[in-house]
Length: 116
Length: 115
Image (cartoon, rainbow over all chains, first blue to last red; front, side, top):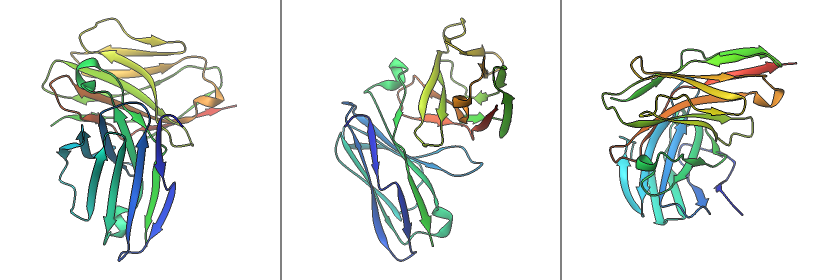
């Protein structure tokens, strides 16, 4: 399998549940990202990992907890979410020093999350 | 703060016609890269075109071209000979060269190509 793969594609969870989103990339990239996509809002950068180290946390509430065990895998652990957290969660990856090279981020197909 | 503004939430164009999607951005830095991404109904974002801010020449990729005006901080996307497969959300984005892994995106423009 190639590219960036996210599972599950769809998730419905109650406000008291705990669930995890998974992202895997087979591109040999070292940087991985979580973005939140909501209607009529800019894509919101949530977290960035570079070589497994978190380099960005964009003031994300603690009910979202990222984990990056290695450069190929990224998780987003969810607990006690609110209905306003319902959105499309996108994972992406990029080359090391993509900012200097101007290379693009590669995205997965996202997880459509609904909090009820 | 760095921001991207896409002022057209939705647009439509007849098949084979030309359409231009607008994008303005704000940053105090002078070195960055700009991107247009396409997000079809499958939801997977794919790169359409890239522009280096230090290059004055506008980038082109087949039917896609940009009009990059650095002083105005404008980066519009022109799609020529529109095809039904161009129907998608289009996002404008940029990344600074200053050393952070932050791709900054706009709100997107939903484009519908009509048969």
